[in-house]
Image (cartoon, rainbow, N blue to C red; front, side):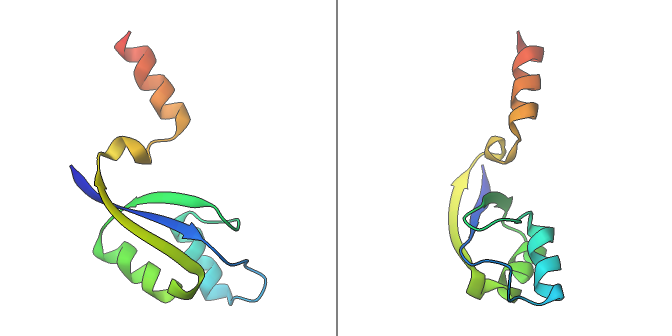
Length: 81
């Protein structure tokens, strides 16, 4: 069990600076109301602090399979069968 963070972009990117846009891109957020599940690490926490006024953050404990893309889940299921 790893500690995870669910991050949702709540504001648009129209009035943010280039540095904030780069930080959001690093978090994997491009569109409003887009949600990503990320590992709870110090660098991720620092990125969240830089743009915390634009995000909604929820911390929870779960397994890393929540972070996988649909393509990876499909590939792992095919390998298991």
